[in-house]
Length: 311
Figure 1 (cartoon, helix red, strand yellow):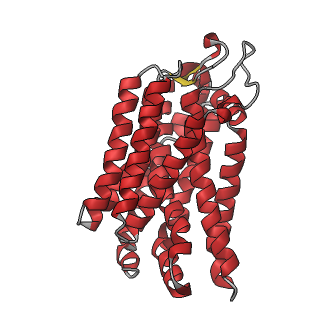
Figure 2 (cartoon, helix red, strand yellow):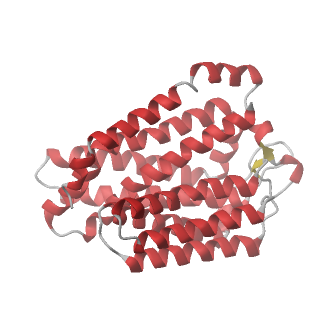
């Protein structure tokens, strides 16, 4: 049961990074646009799906807290600065997009939106880095200190995620930026190679993680060359989602490795709530997942013409 819910958690995060990454990428691109009209058109393009895209992070947090309480506690402790930055970035992004059109002075909101998008993308990249690096979990089962943030690979992972979502947003707006896609692919590939060389003890399946990481790099590069907009957007969406699958596959069956005591490593089974709680979640929450997916798909379908107005 715990493995099933771990898969559900991964699916929800995959949807968030593919869809929420789009919002972050468009937000970061605002400073590169000329005039209020172009910026307003870009935000209007994502407007109908914006809150639907962001709702997945709420669902992911709910599943994490309810189904994997120990992982939630230790991961938030190990990556506390990044988690706080992600929460602030998410709040700033939502508030900025919602409030921008209500005033005449929009420059400040544009800065808030772009800064929040950058903060959110970098923060999630740092969380990925902490997961791959491992956390200083002692024999008492709790995190002691913020040692992972001293590792340059954690920060390189954050940079790679920022570039991935930038390329994703650029593809959605059909702003051909082949150089950006090449740089994003190169940084992603270097990041994968760096983790391969560093070989943290928590990475139990390095081949699976490496293959999926290189697939991520290839997908973002392909997004810059594909001429069909739908195919290019699908490629960058896959590139934004693959880090979730790559990190989970590299660590499984662990979810958060201990750098102090291998016996303190948090596994899927050890992080999960009890069987009774998981059964209750299966009955009460699991049926909502296909409903949310259907509503999201319907939203994209209904507003497909509106998004094309930007182009």
